[in-house]
Image 1 (cartoon, helix red, strand yellow):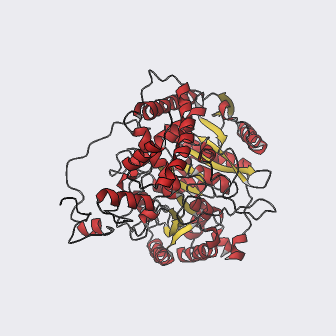
Image 2: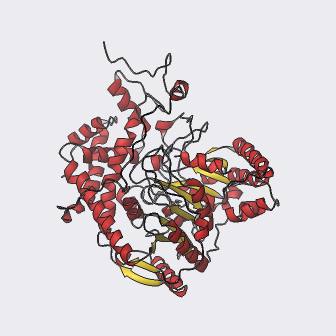
Image 3: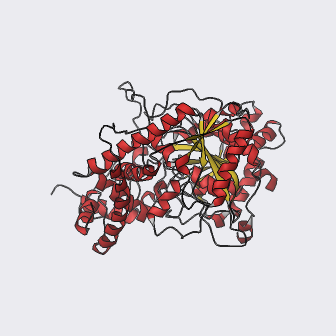
Length: 95
Length: 494
């Protein structure tokens, strides 16, 4: 499998990373080299193997459903690039 | 001053306990060393005023008879750990202006045990790299140089600033994080000790997330004993990280008995790589001889899926990174580049904020997780991950630890490998299995290359058996007697 410039444009959009039209060709070539290298995994028959998502073997535990962290709005907003009136702001999404 | 910065943590602890030096003096000597070492670009943020205040508080605590495990020890923190009130950048433009209002669990524990913060160290952007060249703050320079050659060398990565700071006597200990080798490889490149504990040993809470099933924090020091001391202060269960292990933290230092008689040490035959420098092969053999002479038995083992570890890693790692780094949206913290609508703001912010290697990984990660490719790449890699773990489980049925080289080469010249991502990825060939399987590993400086650069040997142990890992590493360290130090050339250029 190899990616073309249209695929790079599509995955860049999915990742929400702005990529210039003039960069697509170079990126496709870089990504294809990496994909060709990882595709050596196809040499292995993994039909019956259970996928391993984590090295953590224990079952994740649940905590009590209690509020443990609240009332710190100013801390939460302290690093927001454009806060207003105690809120995060984004460009207008509803006309 | 020089003699204070040349101490190990264990030696400094003894002098502090005996009242022969104060935390204030020790800290002042290190503040001077950090300033004198700016040519190495090891620190992104220096915190001298905070260090002085913390040292004074430490001396006061000690006077009251309350001394923690790291009481008065000046440390450097990789700029991936959030420290309250100190800018945290992950060496990325996208976190420009970010100053956390909270403290990571690991640093909170260290400071509660008396450690003194000297500053935040440089790293590859979001810890994605093996040479510290992808930092938006510029590359870190390795304190070591090839004999008779002044070209700058990389310190390894991603914890390259921490490694350089330790090697250049700018801190007694430093934190690193290791996702594929990012503690052990820079330790090997700088003649220092770097330990990645078992996945789950240290809380990941408050550490900028990269690849969450692989990331683990650990100590970087100038001796195995120091790593054991520091890990004890860093480790422990944290309710805020669901993957942190509910286990008691042993006194790792007490495990350094020096006695490896009867232990079985495995040597994986697949780790003999074509093109590996002869000095590394020789050193590895020497490491086996040292352990044999100390009474251990050397056993050849097979890890048949070794060659597939890095390709599997370079699917799992970017996949997790693309998910984790989705949070950088220009809304809640960090950089924002305005756009006509939300989608354009995201794209412009992330396009401007991420460097080339981060962008490459996020695109790969997005691709391997996208509809139609998930099974062929991501699921396949997860299955191969299981095979690699099974290899190790089988090996550890026969042996107590594994001994391997830490890296397939010594430090290389800055810029030499940055054009070829895959050549860079191969740095982690001996370390990455530890991350995929979650096992603890430590790199110990053990010898010099033909060019006079440090080389490390790695000890890998079964999950949560850091005690045996430290015990064996201590014997390797003792036998190697590694005493070489980089010449302090950076002081004359400061």
